[in-house]
Image (cartoon, rainbow, N blue to C red):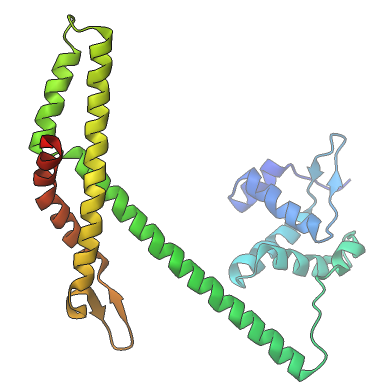
Length: 245
């Protein structure tokens, strides 16, 4: 009777984990390789199976093949030594090529066009994500550093809420005032940010763009600093105006 091994024993031979051996074995089976099974349905690895796994590792690591490609290559090489599923082995993805050179060139052009569209879409998404991140950082900074006027008023409101003598209606009014104050803070910041973007757009391109040999791009870091300073310098005064009206 031939010697067989458990998955853990095979993993020990290769200095890896049982999970990895299981994954490799799954790839070989998907390509048509056949393993023996014990009475519990578990794989029973023979010496030939260990050899097949070693060949898979060699192709995967040494030849830089994808696991699926390496597995198919192993099954082809071992087809005359072990039982294989010929239906799986012979199954290939069908590639339909154009019949004429003109149709082939059209197919290449369509693929190229689609590729450029994907690249352009990804660049646009990356730009929008960067702008959204900037806006979130700006809002977070503003909430963490309220202007002195609104900050003092909020402290007074908070102290009123903690007074036991206040009625429930007054407490509700104070809480509403706190919410309105924060909402006003965000509203004023939004308006100032829009003004800052307009002012930024009026600056010369030499101040707004970074130029290279073949292209130019907007200096996002400088734009962020410009907007942050603009809002930070004007926010306290604008809040005072709104609170005094």
